[in-house]
Amino acid sequence: MGKKQAYPFLLKGLQRLEYRGYDSAGIALIDQGDLNIYKKQGKVSKLKEYSEDKNTNGSIGIGHTRWATHGEPSDLNAHPHQSNDGRLALVHNGIIENYDSLKEALKKAGHKFHTETDTEVLVHLIAHYQNADDLMLREAVRKALNVVNGAYAIVVIDKNDPQTMVAARKASPLVLGIGDDEMLVASDATPLVGFTSQVIYLGENEICELKGDGSYHIYSLENESLTPEVHELELELEELEKGGYDHFMLKEIFQQTETIADAMRGRINAKEGWVRLGGLEERIDLVAKAERIIILGCGTSWHAGLIGEYLIEELARIPTEVEYASEFRYRNPIINEGDVVIALSQSGETADTMAALEIAKQKGALTYGIVNVVGSSIARLTDSGSYIHVGPEIGVASTKAFTGQLTLLILLALHLGRKRALVPDSFFHRILLELEALPDTIKAVLKHKDHIQQIAENISQSNNALYLGRGANFPIALEGALKLKEISYIHAEGYPAAEMKHGPIALIDENMPVIVIATNQSAYEKIASNIQEVKARKGKVIAIVKEGDKEISQLADYIIEVPHTEELVAPLVAAIPLQLLSYYIATIRDCDVDQPRNLAKSVTVE
Image (cartoon, rainbow, N blue to C red; front, side, top):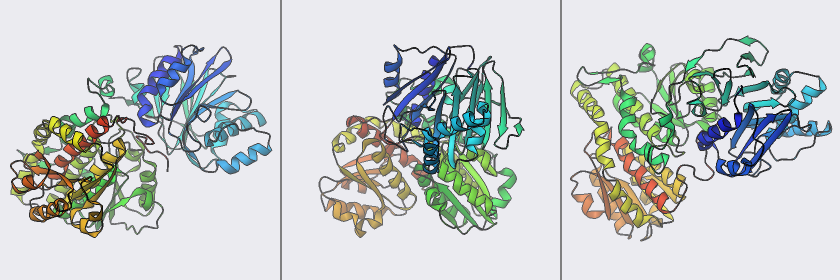
């Protein structure tokens, strides 16, 4: 809001945010006392087409891209939602858990509802307090938020007060952008790039009142005035563009030659022989003395955590457990004060991971976050942490964030192993040299893209796929299967190779591609035997092997060679061809690679 027209900013911002939700999109604009709302099911392009011949004037407006929780995707259920009197419009990320009881009470008070959403209940509730008690907008919002349960990031406008906008958040991110005589609000920083370099990350249970002259005031839910910290926005516009690639996912796969180097920059030095993690140094002694480490994550981050378990136990000999944050939060977990809890999250806003962290903190554990997004909720919630520094990840299926997490976990395991005097000098130096060479190693893998695309063409019409791995490559099998499911909609499962005989072998026939990660030197003969068992049942084997491999290369139908690396680093390298394989299969099947159906990038609700 400010002196400029809001519509162009809203449209551009929604296009940049579409990776977070794309079931429907909508905008609301105030122009000369009129509140104009335009909403369409589908992507932002549908909204643009629908609204281009409408009145899009107005210097104050709100917009939203939706990922459906309550109510199916439709024009009607799309945001913004409006109060009964037509005065207020509201957009909302999150879930109002007690919406049903609130809805019944509002119905008894005469409110009529038109959608299936929990969000409509919230805008009616705000209007109810505003009208009943003749309140200003900020106070009506504050009063309403004190009676709702759940998660929210909301922005509200009032056509009777066109110089005021109110934003608030709880357990869902919200960023304020400070412009020249204007204020901007977004659910993450990407829409703000190119419009402002000054941002405020709104805190938990905070409300912000913004004015048309560019002024703002931030309050707690208890109405206490707060002084925010202003941050410099470091994102660059080119980071949000495809840069000549067909899809963001492909760009992000190829960016890994740079992002892995960025994740390590200033943190290792093979020549001088050290590893440092700036966010952890003042607590490294406590972590090194931990009785137990618990790693929390969801989806791809959980897979990274599983590899972290192998690494930490191998190098530092600290008992490590990996938990789905979504399950951990609903148990009564045994956590002691000597435990360290590590949270993995690309966005730093994953609702289940944040809730699990709260439990860990309440029980006295030291918490450490590994996240990508600067200023995110998990970064602020944890006792210490490290950023992976891979830049914005726009593709819904995580690629560079996954390898960034693995890079940090390798550094952490090495650091703890050295601190505990368990990693010999010669081995430590060898690993550091391999890590510094990783960008070139990844470049060598990416040179096989055409070969991987040919393999994809041969198996793209399969209905099922099986991924097998041993040791630290087992989580890579899980991750490879997840990528294929996410973007190509092929049913795929990841298994420890030794478990194949305990059930999955019954599924293998000539139509079943079996992707085997076969880079483990320690279990090479065992993996070769597993492949023999697949071939005996006419399964098609795609094997990821080390360069120059002889035995498995003769057994497999297709091979993808990767450079020789130490076994602790090999899972990271093996992930790259699996990302490419899933990408090419999805494009051959004409799937929407960057925005696969039913998925959102940042899962900020349960």
